[in-house]
Length: 269
DNA sequence: CTAGAGGCCTGCCCGC
DNA sequence: TGCGGGCAGGCCTCTA
Image (tube, rainbow, N blue to C red; front, side, top):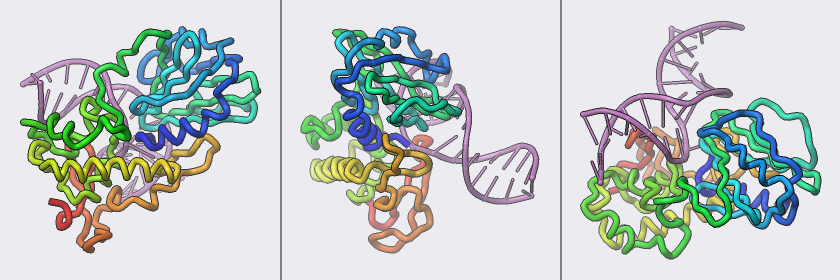
């Protein structure tokens, strides 16, 4: 489920319930997700949650002594419950708050993560990653510079977290389609004007998806359990053999860098 | 350095 | 109805 828009939608959904609350208890029911769940997270108990922020696809639950770093992996989700209810399968983490509400983390595939970062320190998972896509730092000249001599497919390039964070498999295909750029083009072959278009479309697609509450493909739900509605806006993702919304040609699906890629062979050059 | 493949997990969908 | 195979929104790590 989670690409940047889904993570941001989760952040906005949980924030009002968490900020200003004291953590009554931190409970985890599996020893590890992608990595071991550090016992240091227990230090959150008794702390006030000051803010919920996001860097790349990581959510940071910030207190005065440090932050919980949460990643949703491929199948993770966060829900705010009005009170404790019996945990079900794959409900791995609960954060119980002084207002009685419970932040519950569910992740069937366990590709996600809960990590701890003490105040004043930085965490390895947040080091050596590129700029946020929705900031001015991510612009066409930056991409031209980064793409110099890079023969890798532009689709893989925009999904590389060292270049820019937060562009996942769905929105990579979508933004290349709306930019009319072929996903297999070598990154270094794009002109400044093409980068201007692609950068603008990436921002527009991500912003639009956030506004629609994210894309619900299988099981993504917002913090209140409601689905996201961006799936109905998708132009090419998951639409192999269906008519291109622009020219009617069947949409092609192709593996690029082991990831399914959807594009129109007529519209995208 | 890069590109490519493998791996982590479960659930679901498809074809037989 | 059951079973095996393949596939899935991410991303780290190893090999060549």
